[in-house]
Length: 193
Image 1 (cartoon, rainbow, N blue to C red):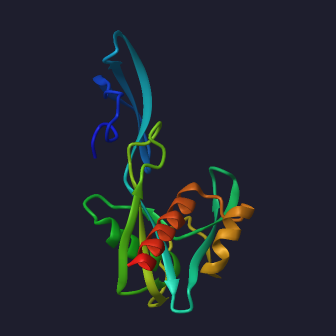
Image 2 (tube, rainbow, N blue to C red; image 1 turned 90 degrees about the vertical axis):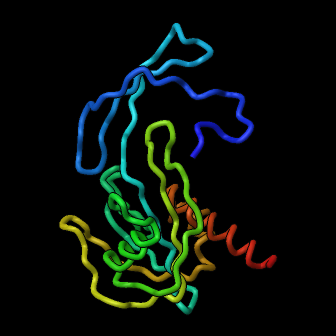
């Protein structure tokens, strides 16, 4: 990944130092001192979260249903409706992580899977990527293997209903919405091919 978008007129800042502020199981809070090339005399301190990459999985059954999960999220203090996903382990391929997370959280699997996109979840605060994996022909292939504090309910929803659920706010997880955008882009490309 480059430091700036193609054709960017804003140069990258020069790092003057970086230190750990706090470490948790999920991320490390870090403080970076940096200076803008336009104003090197006025450096600033910025905090960010050093985190592993994440993966989200859009799993479609033969009946074109999406495998969704309900789970309680502590950040919003509410139950959410999402697609399966989780952290990519160090050295793990994001697609392999997606296939693993799908099976662990739902018991679903398939041999038909591919990466369809990757986004920066929040470049202002996070340094990781969130990958989207599409799994076609998903079916129950084994038992779930939930983590100690995971409580998940699996729901099958027709793919045709997803856009309305996003518009209504039933699905409002930003990275899930981004994943469905990648699916729409893929389907658009496939329809033109």
